[in-house]
Length: 392
Length: 248
Ligand SMILES: Cc1ncc(C[n+]2csc(CCOP(=O)(O)OP(=O)(O)O)c2C)c(N)n1
Image (tube, rainbow over all chains, first blue to last red; front, side, top):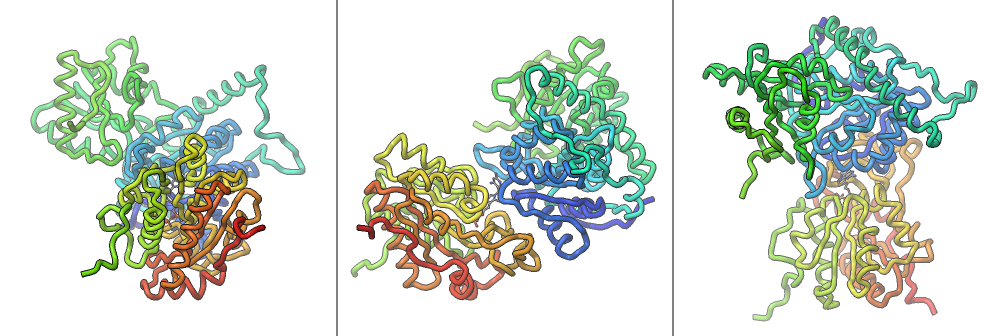
């Protein structure tokens, strides 16, 4: 159990994980803050350390198309993008899951234009929330490294066959140097079987892919995709359990911190979880009964685990990193509200949208959000959302 | 004392953010001088790219509207069709124009849109850290071609300007270089001509400018200019590729 510990930039560790996973085809177009991942992969391929095709395509639209092609013939496929790149590839992003083509994307979360910005929030990933991919959010470098293997393992499982997006915060994680425990290649081999796509395109056994969906079949095709995403859940859990057994690092769809006896919980996704835990520690010392609930698995959404973690609490203070213009609140809070609707013991939800396009949310801001959120919950002021730190 | 050198009127008094030795500031100045000389600052609209020149609107004192990466010529088409009396130009890098924006560039050119494209070719994706572009030369090292570009797997430098010159829609297509003061002056003349072609309504015009990127080429500014002349101009020969005004 456990390999060498390395101090390394998270992007480079992700690239090295893709290398250890022995990806066959990598197609990508550069975009900040994803660039170091593909640069390092191109080095690994050029050095002969990774026997893969690295295709520096002319746009993300083509990157995702190449990925569909390579996955359809049974190649282990990886890509990475951010923001505008994701937007440009979105047409094929939806098609990849409908064709049930496994591939892994490291999605370095960044705000969408406009205004044009290169900094971190979750507006890019929320755009493709309903695209039929499995979405996981990681909190730190170790998580990011680990989840590359997990993502290949889950997506390529014959019971799943879906693309998987590993969401990680741009700059906050991509450009951070962290201590990361590397697993040995043998461990990875044991964990990640060779990819065999049963219905891969092959002249010996012709299949048709990407077919037209007439009205009499389109609905059923969508239901099958829904079954696929929802039905991936047991495989997801099993893949985490086995990773835990092999490495000692155990992950869950919903993770909590000091939440058991908490009356109020702050809900985060991605790297904010770490700051939230620190702030909760201080608030606990001051006697506040607060905890943290972290959503790791976003699609399929873990309804039971989420409800199990929060029913009976007084309030949830939910931080969204994206805005839904004219909508009922941030996308995360809206979903949590409907997941809890009319459930006995459901907490009220106070929704903050914070940290848009890299606006810093410091420990002090977390503290303000938690305390102000608690007061709002107590006074019944829980409609809509608050755009935290709005100036003017 | 007689003033012999001033800043073009349509450039704001703001220092450029570009790296030392970068060609963008020179090309900004050339475009600005042309706008002043043609007296079109009250009717010109510029379209900066996603790329190192993304902040061009901070420097030009004219109407400007940022286009998403590669979409300059499509956005320009919209402006021109709706306001044919305006003079529209795009300012695009080689990633913007010859990679992600190839389709809209070729089609705008093929339709003979009466717009002008200023195409800055530095043979890499500068802004994102110097990755290989379609224009990267064989054996040129970049952050995604660490041992140099290999034609067997990555193909050959794309001469999009030559491609465009084969179309019927364009009226004026030329390639220039910033390698020497004389060549810089020739570049300016050509940019002026491209705008004049648009003003006369003759069709699409494009000027490619070979431009150094010392930072991403990992060369000193002086060596970058030498590389420009000795290497880039070999791969991308300079000259006027198409000029309908020269035809009888
Ligand atoms: C859809 C999309 N993909 C990727 C990017 C990231 N990006 C911004 S500029 C750029 C390349 C710039 O290179 P070039 O056009 O050659 O101009 P230069 O910076 O060298 O002047 C890239 C890849 C983006 N903004 N949008």
